Image (tube, rainbow, N blue to C red; front, top):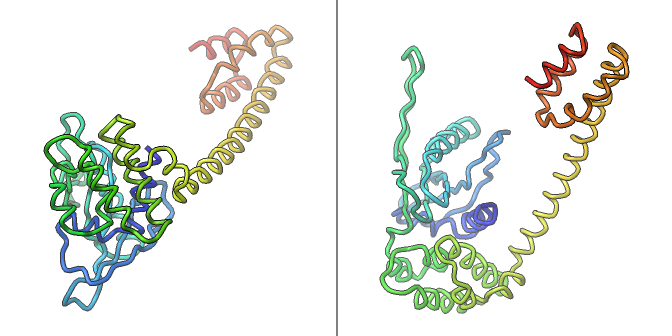
Length: 299
């Protein structure tokens, strides 16, 4: 779902206040996205926003997590996000979780409580959930906020989707900035695909041409290409390292047990787990016979 993640992050960076308003956060005087790389960690929040409210002297920090579907794992992700915010900024953020479309029977948690094994420590957190399919599309459109338009096709409305999609297109066409217009058309298409599988609807939003011309999509393609290159280099290094380990393992086996050990090479290569290969290398140095090693390979 990488493309939806990217679209969500774009919306946070450029229209984060619109998301907050969908979460019933009011009286925002000004806002800005802030860096999400709080500490080095494999999992980062989708977005952080500092919003200054009317009558307040200091901005508040909002942490945004966007999930395509309600899933049980989201609650743990939110707890990770809260912990990261506290570790990196010593700020307890206002957390908003946005779900795009219903699927399955999972009831998303709005709170979680963790207890240490011995009961000395309790950690409880709660957050605000926005189920986009329960937000009236008319309310979003009535706000006049262009930042909410890409979310409208996933909101609640009666009747066929075509009139809503056409209204989204009309709103986006009023934007003067070509870059912003092209990006919002592409993002609206991406998000609409979560709910619909009708190319005629996507043509209303510019279809394939709009997707190709969008600067955001060009950025995505560049990012995917770079990711593929990096993964290819990593895979090449892994394969090279693995090939070296297999050759070393076969050398040990042949020197210890003779040429007959070469017959095991095919079975050893079929061992896909690097940790398993390491076990075999260690066993090759200590096992008493080729039969013992073969038993380990087939275990």
